[in-house]
Length: 218
Length: 217
Image (cartoon, rainbow over all chains, first blue to last red; front, side, top):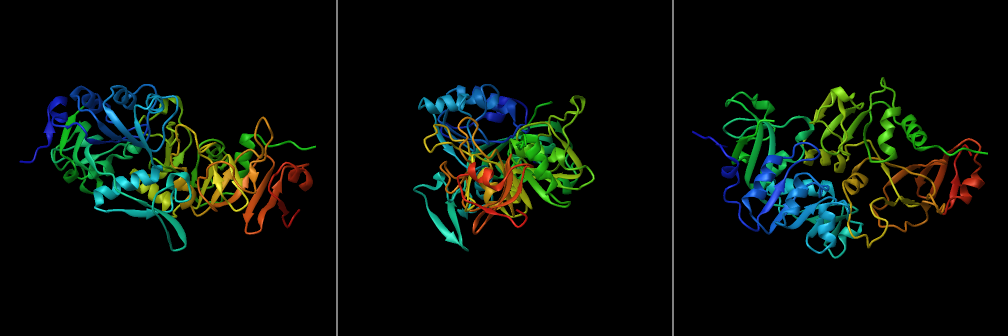
């Protein structure tokens, strides 16, 4: 019987190695905050964190960065007045800024087995300096590579024991694509439902992309 | 004498030009206000980068849904008929040419349609890119909403060449400022509209780029 549920946070976070690339989903909603606290507790270090933005002065992303376990941050923007902004300006954090659509597409590409792609986004900007560009169908394009995760931290509204997920409203955001792009997708779900309870056509993230699920009642 | 539009005035002026049926993304700043001026019976579908199709009006405090936010992480509602997609599909909407219109704020726009809206200097210590570069290259039309001149110095933001780092090259179709509406054409900026009481000459005086009189001017 396939059963991806784990019963404790420690079990959910077990085995995350130093140096891992962590994909962290969320955009205002849909951030698996309980798992982020678990990652800090688990203690893996020299992490690369991939997340939409660098967060603020408090909250899960700020807490993770302040723990000193993140070596490199890949995201679409960082507020200068934030934990991430200060760490970077003090030379204590590597930073790779990626346009948000390119970030999402690089993650999607990793999950889809796309080895690289060209996009006009950022091709005529400072972000393209020293990088490979090519004119395709008359448009200047920039070469981009996928972002693979060792671990994805995922938020769900409902989950069954196969790991089929639904995400509530705009809390979906990065969750489906990050689950696909990581070797191990760890999910916190607000609700547990029996296998078959989610209408098959309404599964947002298929269980085949999910490895562990922890019930975290909201 | 003339009176410049305030930020809501610019937003309302833009809303007048958005027809029923368009699929539209509004950037942070002045553009966010545009949807407030589209009459409810005109069906315009608004997109948010975090995967919302069909943004409705802001909720009353008692109706806030914590799972439903826009790209500025403000609480929103969903219109009947709205839908959610994941982040890669949401940016496929932006990058894949599915938006009829994107309205962005900017620091500067140049006469060949370059837009600069993400950094004031190449040396800014912390870079804040977000989704503007994706929206700027991907939408069918890009309009810009901004003040015509900088606040303190009164420098023109309508430029021959942008002085700030670019967001994208040659993509702006139209600019709405507190003074005028300008089309970006192969010949340069064409004045489509001006606030009441402003003359072409007075507008040119406040503009670094050379302006061209529109048909009605």
